[in-house]
Image (cartoon, rainbow, N blue to C red; front, side, top):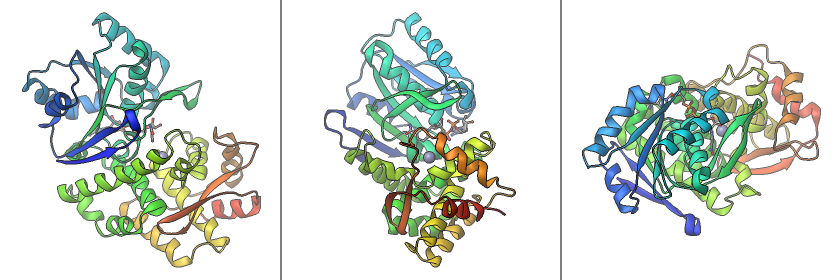
Length: 359
Ligand SMILES: NC(=O)c1ccc[n+]([C@@H]2O[C@H](COP(=O)([O-])OP(=O)(O)OC[C@H]3O[C@@H](n4cnc5c(N)ncnc54)[C@H](O)[C@@H]3O)[C@@H](O)[C@H]2O)c1
Ligand SMILES: [Zn+2]
């Protein structure tokens, strides 16, 4: 088991990186959480992972109540939150009780929001099972739900007691989801760590063959990079915004195509467009751009989109909740491993980069 710490003063917590569920009960005991326990999961993860996880708890004398939500983003709403509140009230959950989020980002965000708000905050543990959740959403404490068609518009910052990351859960994850999760990992390399970028590039086949050492190393560096950014800027005032690399255009594509493409697929396209913008601004050389394109292709992520509607994507960027004073913020790379944040108001340049995504 590999342990890393996220240092956030009194909200600090460990991330345990493991290859099975056998250490989960002990991790709960070590963090001195007692009280009732509810495992929140979704219908797919329950089938693929639920039994193994609950068996590991029961083998150590724990009883976990289980609540299963329907898999998918459509469950990430206040109705689901209300249903979970009712479930907890019926079971007489109190301030010592705990919630375990077994699943991807949807389960993590929902469970975290319930934990943040039920009785003004109860214990919460993240057991991320998708690559996106292991690399991104389980670290950082952002929790919440969608509302009136707006993603993540209701939420809180609420840190878990710990994250228990079992890399072998990825074996049951659909491969398209696995590829999509890799986009955030490539992003971490580009924004912060050229050696990690090299590691990803050289180890794509090991990763997709579930090599335990490669996956544990991947998880460790990912959580450290995201963790270090969050430690320096927990509530996203400045530095944390670099995590949005590839997301300004990526989110717009996601929205224009009505979530037909997975988030990671859109981030892949957004990163390619951001790299092209950086190239046009003479910030980065062509060789770095083609290197990233090659890595993304090797992973099986899209680097172009047939018939992309340039104007629609451009206009949609201004709808993003992060846009202030109608100015578009971009995170652009100076090299693989270093990015800067900038405001760009050159419509022609932005549209040229979006147009480059045309297949
Ligand atoms: N809190 C944050 O900081 C943060 C960051 C990024 C994304 N998010 C949120 O995360 C969500 C996306 O997360 P996601 O991509 O994990 O989506 P998800 O939770 O919907 O999981 C993707 C799919 O894979 C299935 N699945 C997950 N793990 C599995 C496993 N081990 N075996 C079999 N099936 C499995 C799920 O049932 C689902 O169908 C979005 O709602 C997004 O807003 C949050
Ligand atoms: Zn993302």
